[in-house]
Length: 264
Image (cartoon, rainbow, N blue to C red; front, top):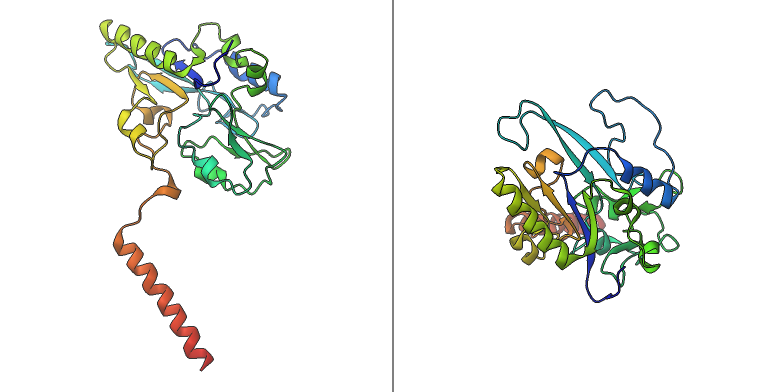
């Protein structure tokens, strides 16, 4: 139960414990009354959910990886239960023109459906491809970190049902310490490929990036293998090179001169 709302909460997802059962996906859909995504056979892996979307807020990805995780391994799977990162510097929140996306008292990022107008500006502003417009109501949707359950003193549905404790919920500072300890344990066992995602101090200090993530991941390979960007820079905060700015100003001046010439 979360009692101190002054301390941010979040997820720690340990991919080394994930067995790909997709119980978290089912629990998320059931609790949030999300529609099914159909039964199309993709023939690409054992995962037919494709990706996070406006109707899938938790997605367990199956990545075929020869020799991943352990020395001498011949064939294995990388599993990742992906979810909204609830970023410190949330691109979706910055891009929202109506104020529909807010930060809750738990420091999580939440979309108010009664304020969202479905403009979709938040979709390209998310560097992780999390936010999406639902085909049901054409509004933006993503993981709420079970805001309604938190307010009732309950943990999120996905963490509640995870049979291996791969998904852990709690105060973010405690999860960060737990993640560091788990990483150290795996390294001692010889899992040199293990690494943490979402705790990079350099990114956290760079306000052009996502900052510290509210969803921490322990990975067994490079982030790109899990379709996670190695480094994030929010598009709306990107500083353009001076040459680009000079060209833009020149173009505007040229357009203005052309209109002035036509009026004469």
